[in-house]
Image 1 (cartoon, rainbow, N blue to C red):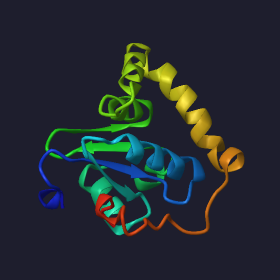
Image 2 (image 1 turned 90 degrees about the vertical axis):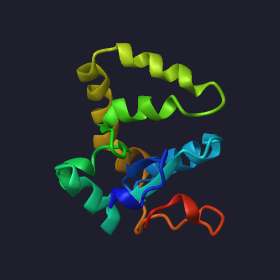
Image 3 (image 1 turned 30 degrees about the vertical axis):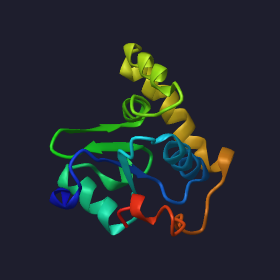
Image 4 (image 1 turned 180 degrees about the vertical axis):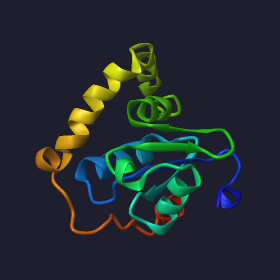
Length: 140
């Protein structure tokens, strides 16, 4: 699968029915001035294929945000979010400095939000359907 990903692109896998996750995707798209990121929902066939290729449990991944750098590495939870922030315009790269905090601490906060995301932010019945202008940014 990753051989179809253009060189230099990074893939973000997200919960496609989560309002918080969809808002995060829109936030990233608006600040992806270097056109680095591609997106796929974890529920999609390609999302499930990408997680399986890396030995990631799909059920576990549903509570996570994943960043895949094809041929390099993949990141989950707070580490993924901080890695994404490095490539965002508008000064958001400063967030990457939070990576000095212990991953267990960062992920405990991340997990609290992930566990309550549907209750706090709501849930859609279906995965987000990108507009025609944004379709090229999505793998599924």
